[in-house]
Amino acid sequence: MTSVVTAGGISVTIRGAVVDESETVLDRLASDGVPSSLTSRNAKLWGPDAAPLAARRLGWLGLPETSRSLPARLAGPAEGFRDAGLDRIVVAGAGGSAIAAETIHRTAARRGPGAELVVLDSTDPHEVSGVLAGGLDRTLVVVAGDGVEAQSLRRVFGKAFSEAGLGRAELARRFIVVAEPGSEPERAAREVGHHFVEAETDVDGRFGALGAAALVPAALAGVDVLALLDEASRFAGVLRQPYDNPALALGAALGSSALGGRDKLVIADHGSGLHGFAGWAEQLVAGALGKDGRGLLPVVVEGVESPGFELTGDLRRVILGRRPDEPGPGREAGASVAGPLGAQFLLWEYAVAVAARVMGVDPFAEPDVGESREATAALLRSEEGAAPTVVRRPPALVSDAVEVHAPEEALRGAKTLTEALEAFLEDVPDRGYLAVLAYLDRSGDAAAAGLRPLLAARSAGLRRNPAPVTFGWGPRYLHATGQYHKGGPRNGTFLQVTGAVTDDVPVPGRPFTLGELQLAQAFGDQRVLRSLGRPAFRLHLRDRAEGVAQLIDALG
Image (cartoon, rainbow, N blue to C red; front, side):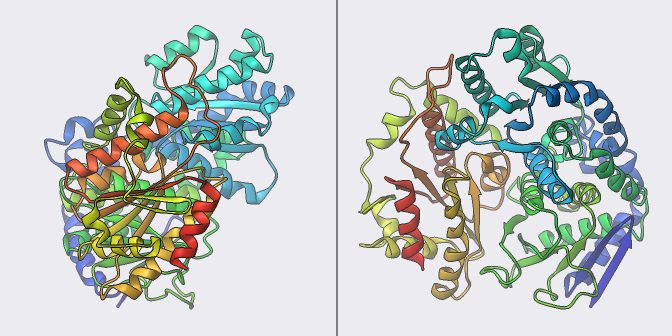
């Protein structure tokens, strides 16, 4: 059975048994007046307990129009930056807005040349050093947010500019701060002379793909953000409709799948041209829906023929980019979504908000995100600091460049790296998942992402019911799937990968380095996971390149 809903430039196709389930939910949503209530920003849609926060978090519905002033507000400063030769935009931030900025630039970059955009939401000293060495003389830094990543990076870049010989006035002009008016980041920015751009007060980063924190760096990098907003505006006109509404149909399908016990959502891109969009959708779905022991876990795979895509049972699959009439691999997937980027941002935000109502969760609350942040801060405040606390613990197994840190009982007598990895896969409970969390350099250690398909393929050979395998870069995932890991169903097994730091980066004005901060983030999150009864293990690479190669060889 197949249902196709097309409107506003978006097409959503739903197939299989989920059609009947979602149609029932769809009819209830329409009869309850949810489409008109949501577009009217009714904060009570998710229950009385969620209403106070929701009332301050529904501004994303108006962003296709309210964000149109941004290009004009940036025109003067942008021209000055270009005249000064600043054609490399570095985003120092974290969360959904940073991932959205990266997706917007990578997608738009295919349409023509523009400035370079680098999203730096990492505390890995190797990755940061690589960015610092990549053209500091032409770099403009956009600081988005007041988290530890953004503020640490602001300090690091400030010192680097100063050491490069920039005077106080020129150094100040190398930063743009995007923050809410009246916030501490605004006060600090105005105090030192940084250019300041107001962020919306009623939008959070998870739902802020069309807000200032995402669009400012994209616009400075030469992206036509008005065209992106036009795509969203054309689609916004259908959101009030109770029928022929693709976003409502997708939300009903997501919500009904979760209610039916199918709590995994495999996402594969199939020629959509929306580069990096699956990662943005991952953070939205996981963070908005993963709480109170419920949720949908996004499992982003490399393509429709990748290991893990064909998993069945309690999983549903979404393909990005497939047209309803297009043949080929994955046609039998639970849902297919096609349409332009601006409209897709709005489609998924609306659909996830609807799914949250169906599931009975508050889409805007992040009740578990702060636990890892607090654990990180506690480690950094300790007398010895994060690094000495970690490295003094002896590994349970050493295999050349790889140390395995896990309880003896979890290794099940493993004597080799391959046996240890298989033991972790076998430890995943039925209907559970394995999350690989790599605190490494996204550029220099990019090969580590290949562990996901290899582990998925090995799981298929070991288990009658293969375990879904996800992959996340740390600390990026803390703002993405981290909420689901701690607040969603308690069926995850976690495998961290850390690496030796050969050239650390001090954080000016702080008693720690980036390497110590990164390790504190890894161990802070691991402590929280273990306190919740989640199995959490660690692989430490004594040599990063050799260690990644060794892991790939052990699984290959």
